[in-house]
Length: 333
Image 1 (tube, rainbow, N blue to C red):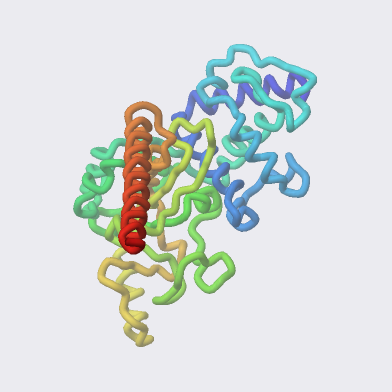
Image 2: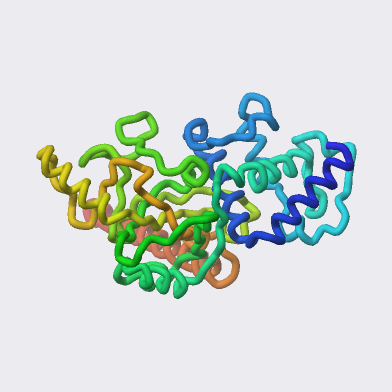
């Protein structure tokens, strides 16, 4: 990029950062980074900015994203700096001077793909989510308890979307690998049962599997390493909160009974057509503390626990060696 192109790109990004909440944009970068790092990246990293890199260089994208300045640093930058070294994708960037590749990735992900997403991500509180679900007559029981450790809740705001009539929909959860979120946001849910994209079973048929039990969906959500500079967390997992029309559920039950298929467990929902499932919220959890990445007390407690475990293990080994030596000495006598 020349100086004018960089200036235009940074101004457009700053405008987007001023219009949208940082958490939602941060999440978009994290989900794309997780897709690039996944071993199934050829399948889940869709869309991909092939116009920026030859041969779908996922490693170069991952390196550029991990070295990316924070979104707040880009927003606070008053005047973009230019450098002849910015044209190299291997060059590192300072917190105030992103490389051309980094700017191109942000421009593609946050601006050009906005129409394909057709939604904005805005954070809300647990109490706000509960109030919205109660107003629609479909609040799952124990929601506040399940979301106690939730790092953030993102509402999908679609322009011109009409709210369903109270009581007409059922709220259900869908668990999936975090690496799949980038594709879901831009391509929608896909019925991968019976295809090479299938990662779990399809015991009860082809379609989108949901559950009215949060714990069931959470067990299917797998954490992945995302963007290293994310303010949400480095290792994230996501549970999708969805709405399904009661009419669709009744049609599905009637169809299953007519075909003589085995009945679903009570807490499961199977929707044959992905278009009948509307993703309304993203429930985001961070596994950083569990992996020892959190600073402060959590990290110190983890190290103390590991030291205590090591001490007890060594003491046990020494005791076993002394017992073996004593038994050997007695046998010689």
